[in-house]
Image 1 (cartoon, rainbow, N blue to C red):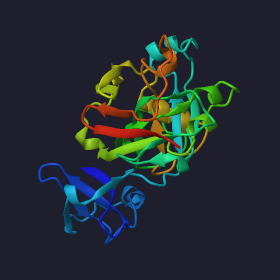
Image 2 (tube, rainbow, N blue to C red):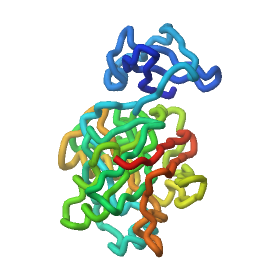
Image 3 (cartoon, rainbow, N blue to C red):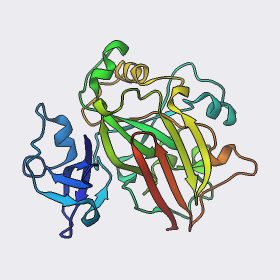
Length: 275
């Protein structure tokens, strides 16, 4: 299934399932206030809710208020090398703050505080079951599904200090969506094509088979330090081709359109505007 957050003309955000065959949204709001509630529920949602054509609704970020967004840096070998930082021995973990989340079609707003806004196509893992000290062997039992995340980054802020989280958390710097595709629909999350283009020009093209630390290792490592919660997101890192790794540097510009595509998950498109 494909879990979404949507709104109709009245503007109220509701959880729903997207039916690709009929291009309809099933409203789940009779029993759940949000997609987080669906993820946390021990029972399968009823599919008897009202149905809306996709063309008549607006999609928002599929998880509007996750407990936390863990991000993994330098998790593709080619990206670590292009960044000049070497191959990490342990996962490099930082955070994106929840207020930075936007949904499909929402604009990335470039503030004057940064002159080096960059893009990062990433596969994000959504946990359905929490836990502490989860073994790698059991980690996939804790995964609810997957979505697309663009880890927009202010590089000048990022490298001004050794702490990355604030540079990743400016308003609108976390485009996410269009849906959370449940784990049963993705046979192998470590074999998915991942691409990013700007105005139709392909700038990133890789495959999640290139991940240095795979999903079970990430779940095991993070949960060995802090308990994980249902709805937590782990964004698994970006491949090479980011703007800071290019010669000359290639920063995001107002007026551009960024599209991230991941095999089996669809595409996430964001216009870029000046704040």
